[in-house]
Amino acid sequence: MNHSIFRFARGLVSAALMVSSGTTFAADTATHSLLTREGAHRAVAAALEYARQHDAPGGAIAVVDAGGHVILVERLDGTFPAGADISVGKARTAVMFKRPTKGIEDTINKGRDAMIPVAAVTWFTPLQGGIPITVNGEIVGGIGVSGASSAQQDEEIAIAGANALASPASSTSGKVGAVEKRSAAEVKAAFAQGETGATLVDDPAFRVAASRRDGAGQAEVHATETDIFYVLEGRATVIVGGTVVDGKQTAPNEIRGSAIEGGESREIGPGDVLTIPRGVPHWFRSVKAPFRYYVVKSLAGA
Image (cartoon, rainbow, N blue to C red; front, side):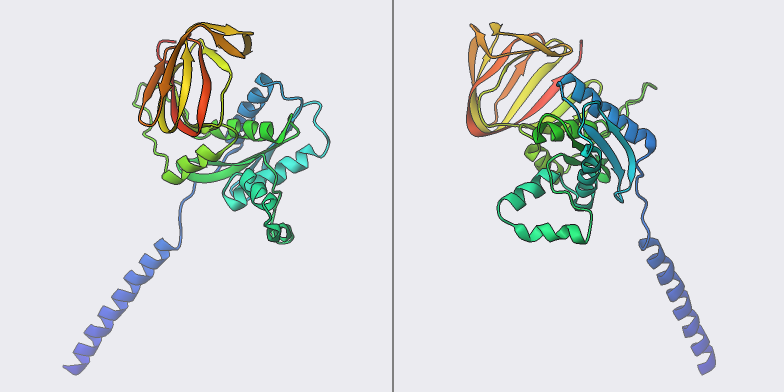
């Protein structure tokens, strides 16, 4: 009897170990998205398009995978020779630290010199212009830009490239589009990017941006986009209608100028929603900072 009990108990223990081993093995692996060559080309194409539309005098654009390995490098004519290497360094740094490189550069400039020796142990180019590429909440690579008109424009070009992959390509099958979520951390990071924030969702029918303003801006007219503002923080005076002063076409279907003559004044603050139909001039004449707001750009009916 004792031997039977022993054999039964030993069997239970063996079975438990097998189950435990199988469970452990499953937990020890994970499936990740992989940035492809096609995806890298799409990011670079979007970055190049932004650079051309905004008259960048040059620019080297590099895309790396999640491990920091180079997939693609493109260089506009007129870019200084070292730009390619620096763009790769920025892309790698954005991936390795999982954040835009501007934040790292700002930290060092504020006195944290202890970060400088990090270059001795890992890829580290703490210069503005590197952005992680995030797809469905997962960092799949990085894009770096060097050699545009300024460090700020380097970052703007990189953001344009990263945003090209931020959401799945639209379907032509007639099916409902993918449901997307942006985490609180992603939204916070978007508000902090560049001079005015960054795009959260980029869809053929609409875009959603986390935006901020520190002062008055240019007068704008969007021929194909309806703007919908939802204010989170701060106050602003927006002039709508009227005539744009010194208006110039700065991009397809977009005119910008120095101010607006005539028009009507709208005061907006936290919780307010302001809708500006396509073709209507608008101008942030004054802003009480910090001013943060969501912008939904609708292309419906365009």
